[in-house]
Length: 191
Image 1 (cartoon, rainbow, N blue to C red):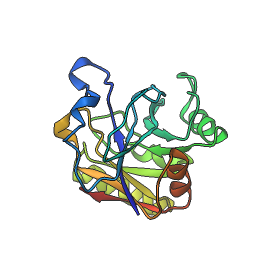
Image 2 (cartoon, helix red, strand yellow):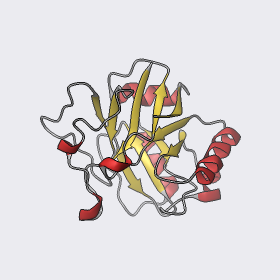
Image 3 (tube, helix red, strand yellow):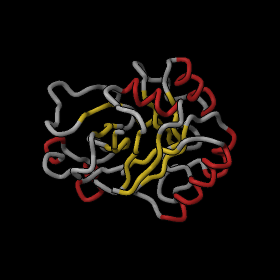
Image 4 (cartoon, rainbow, N blue to C red):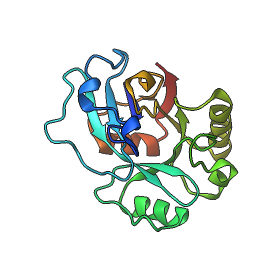
């Protein structure tokens, strides 16, 4: 078993939504085994970035024409002008998984009912949105027979430690995250 917050940002879209890496130290819940940095359209592993007590993994948050997608397992980014279907196909062709990020949010670009039109690997339950939006996401996942992940979507220290993903398997790499999502061996939990 491994508990990971699978949706944390270090770089923001504006200077008011930046969580400097050094601010993570001492601010993560001891319930967490690790975190996954998922900056917007940034696919890089920060050199010399480590948290002694926590595993650190990297994914990416992509913006499609209809909503945001969390991608894990990619080595390269898709073109930003792809349709949602093309973006998900790109993720799958590059051996990654596509997770619908905050699909029913009223605060973010979100898929809402269009989430049912796409071949997602999982649906995210998101710590930065309301219970009603997350309940709709949960119902969509059940209806689509998809697993759910959990992430805080933190852009600041105050947003950390809300929701994370409980993996039924030991997670040592991003490939382990991909495999666990594909095997439906994950679920969101409150931190």
